[in-house]
Length: 165
Image (cartoon, rainbow, N blue to C red; front, side, top):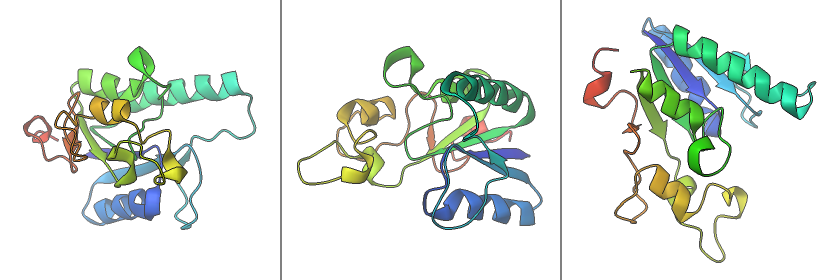
């Protein structure tokens, strides 16, 4: 089984999960679009800090295209994906492509990224903390417990469609 953890390494969990999965015999990689304060270096650096904006986006798209061929499981974090450009058709684009390609898709939500924005809270991740983002991730009840939307499983490979992975 080939597992890709991305796009962020919140609390170093992507790095820790990938290393634990390797110990269990899986091929697991961490690909991040930004660094972490916790140290676990990504296997694949998608920040492309030395490139201009258009070049970065094209490089990310090329990586996603390759990843869709090479990985069985896509584990996303913090209510985002590698190609995530706001609302509508461009939101969580690669997550949707992975799901449509029949891949196992999972999303770990870390708390703030599933709650609707509220006065006095959630300053560090306000872009992810809105009702629209929670709805995209499946929070139809509006209670902050977003789990399954657009084929996203809460927890790694917990859904029936992921059994084959």
